[in-house]
Amino acid sequence: MRYIGNKTRLVPFILDVVGDVQPDAGVACDPFAGTASVSRALKDRGWTVRSGDLLAFSYALQVAHVELDRTPRFPAALIGDAEGRAARWLSYTRLLAYLTGLPPRHGFISENYSPAGRAGARHGRMYFTPDNAGAIDAAREQIAAWSEEERLDPARSQFLIATLVEAADRVANTTGVYASFVKSWQPNAKRQLELRPLKPTSRHNGGRPSSAYLGKAEELVASVGTVDLLYLDPPYNERQYPAYYHVPEVIAAGWSTPPELRGKTGLIPDEALRSDWCRRDRCEAALRTLIDRSDARHILLSYNDEGLLEAEVIAAVFREAGDEDSYRRADVEYRRYRSDGDGPSRTYLRDRVQEQLHYVRRR
Image (cartoon, rainbow, N blue to C red):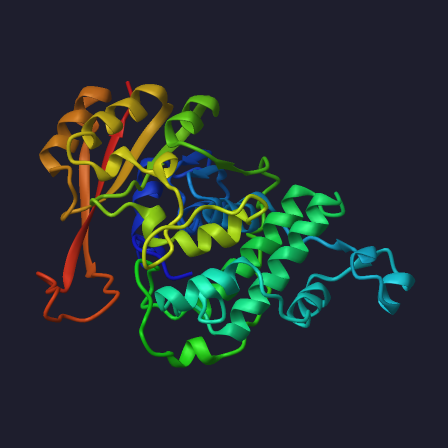
């Protein structure tokens, strides 16, 4: 999934630093998991991972890639066709084919995020073509129905939701974030929605099960107890993620109680999802609170050199919280994420930015 701050390209760099501070895999907590790229990489290296995030679509991705160890089977009775009558279990790929083949429905996505709906047409919203919006509605409402009827357990439900979120993102008529939509149909948006199989990260060496969490970072770190590694990858600027990813969030959370949308882009109510890390006057206190509530042997913070917190401030907080002599910082330069090009209303200051990994060992 296209995501601001996704660490996929930086995973080798991060794993090298983790390996330096603790060569043997242990228990790691990743409370700002996002698309779970670092959590799944740690799990693949043998770590037991406790991942978390405030956003529902992130939670679905965490369940799919971190909490689950293998692709689940599904009750054949879900679709009740010939294969369903002959076997107890249904394959994941067969179920995805069924969801893809459902007749389109005019639901919440069609009404609000495509030109097919009154609200979508009134605001000129072009997040999805009418065909793809109808396909998303059909698949999401079917998953919700199975869950409400208790024919799907929560993990399988989240696995299917993650599959749908990834599929919807591939045909979204955006430049990578949902803060705005493109005013003409891009080639990817014209393609038919396709639910492609996801692959959970396998558990290695008989390690303990990993887990996913939906909620605030400070609540997760306080609840998991002692861990070997606390990996922090918080927001680093004033962009509030619910406003940039409100459409995937709606798809993941569902609309059994339809949210009241606002503005040209159909933003969702997000006060409970806003982060102090995106507020210049609160981010330092947020860092101190999180460290105070954690019980971790090693703390690693991934931060951008354009962030609200100055590197000197982070270093001071880390030295206070741990063994002062153990503090160090590793940097790597990479090409910045750009959702669009330079133009009259926006000019990027530079094409390359620096990722900083701040480390301290707790006393």
